[in-house]
Image (cartoon, rainbow, N blue to C red; front, side, top):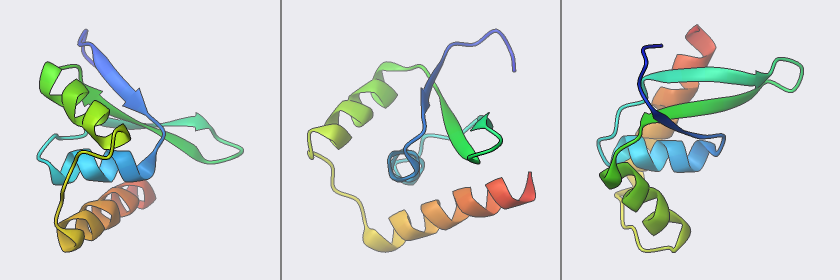
Amino acid sequence: MENKVYIKTSDLNLAATLLCLGFPIPAIDYIDLNSKKMEFYFDKEPSVEKAMKDYWNKNLKVEPLELFNARREILTRIKNE
């Protein structure tokens, strides 16, 4: 990856929510190959940080089908990497 600053999360549902909100995932990486736990990278921007804070404070509304599709897109990407 470039010399960019990223925010990371291992929470699949948070990653899917951010993707659903239009924030791209520049990289997905394994935290631990044995447990197959993943980390999802997002550009460190105030809008991403705000969306993450709103997620944890339960202040976000997303369309359920869009969220489902974003989650499926992430899982497909993991499977194909």
